[in-house]
Image (cartoon, rainbow, N blue to C red):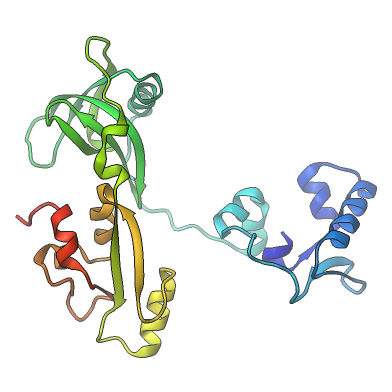
Length: 258
């Protein structure tokens, strides 16, 4: 609370921990004595932080709002609700039971390249949320390899006991990492480049993101770089914000362009 809003009151502790006013005051005084950069503001009747306060352990905004849901209303937060790829609760439950119980699942999967669902025996090891899409990474007996599946495209799922389990520890692409060198598009002005790169947490001149090989495709797609990297040049058109500086290294880990 103190890190994000700059102040904390006795009432905040009482609401958060259901403690008495006396206990809240004792806790705040003890915290202030042990924490540099915390002083009491007589005018505002609250504890405030100053420049000596260490903000490095504050966490991120979503974590803060999750711990203090009432702050969404107090600060005026509004969430943009976008379509989420729906998935049957029973299918997700079956996939989770498969993962936790190490029992293969028989699924009917509707691929975008097929007119009819196909049956596959899978051994899920990780669920991946990518923007509005939930996927799971699993060993697929039909492909005899580890593959990604969209949960929303699973039409049915059931546990089966007549097939062996393939552990996710064998998924080499999941445990191997690759570095993606990202820079601002050269057509951006210096101020545009600084803002654009700051949005993804990289310096204005560019930087490196380390990511699992298995989900490289989704990172590039999210940044608008996938087609450019698949084409080998890593530079989208002039309306793009980023360029990839090492497309040749990354092409090896991506599906070929149709």
